[in-house]
Image: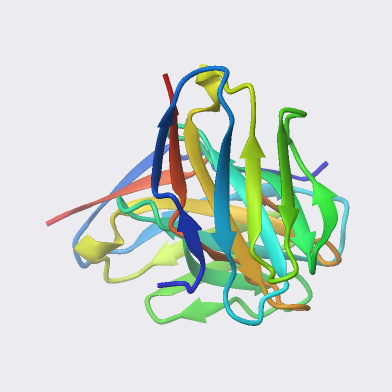
Length: 112
Length: 114
């Protein structure tokens, strides 16, 4: 158990819909990262937040957005969903100045 | 842009034997970090080992060790005394020194035969 929690574990929704994925980082970690893993592929970095501020963006679609709240939990919002958005979405967290990222169990999103 | 390449989509090893997974990366940076993550069927991403580019000594964690060749931009993972529980996808990852964004390779699926 990494200490990073993600909800929900599974999500099934239809094309065109909007969903919100939630992540709670490890206690004390200020950084949260979101990754997307499509079927049998590596992880693609989406976005990084540090203490409530966006720090870096990767290959994140304009239909996707994220935020980190004062209690440090983060939400990833996916809108106008397409079949190709079906994937495993991971959240990871790290301490300030630490190099390792600790991953949550992921949310499996299925768009039908 | 930094890229990470894992040229072996699949590898297999006999239980108790040794296997080496390959990873190469492309960067113009001199300071960076390299990681190997394990993803078992549960899909949980588990950190196996990390290497700081400024360190010449290869990192070791129990049965896991790396061969870091900075000039060649190569970062292979050696698993000794392979166990059935080592069966998983293994991902190589790169991170720049002042940047927390990690770039992952496509992964190598390791099968351990009893």
